[in-house]
Length: 159
Image 1 (cartoon, rainbow, N blue to C red):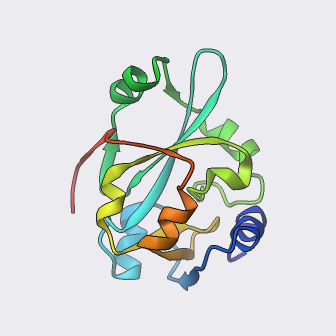
Image 2: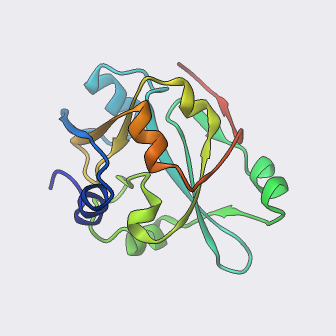
């Protein structure tokens, strides 16, 4: 696998221009950054959240950051928790475990993205496996996120 089927179809349908970047297999964001010679601030990750009513939300943030659930809870006036890993596999059945693409629209999910991502010239997103990244320019990322809410809901852990 190189790019998840649903992700590829969505990007093609919406005319988002991207490049697929291969790297040596990795198992987490930090490892992907090292193997791709990128900063973790350039890598975009997804964290799947769910509220008490079972409504899902994909939080999209830099790989260098940690999510603040309290900031999201306050902003959305909901009580979010991180979705259990076993449930994530069901949502992203065309992806390898642990390689969730931060492209919620391809999976009919609501999303919010951290404003910090708009500071990067190039962004790299999981493609759905552990050896490929989707490279987007800032303009293409803006197009991808055009209907999403943007907030500051994370804090930087490392560069």
